[in-house]
Length: 99
Image (tube, rainbow, N blue to C red; front, side, top):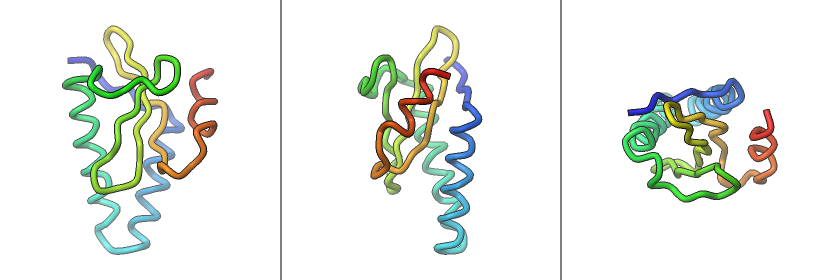
């Protein structure tokens, strides 16, 4: 099974969303992280399951939360590019593919 590698901006996305959800309701940020972890596990098990949405980038939706995880599959590693609210403009994560 390939390993997941989160880019620093993807980690920042997760932290930002966690803080926002914790401010909305105590414990909700942790529920968000559990949902993201479940999505990461599914991505690791079957990375090709999710659709290509831009070049080689794929998108997996997070259950219960309006977030999408964007990632690129390499032979031994899955690079997580972003975890962004689905209402945000695509250019926010697409520009990360160049880095």
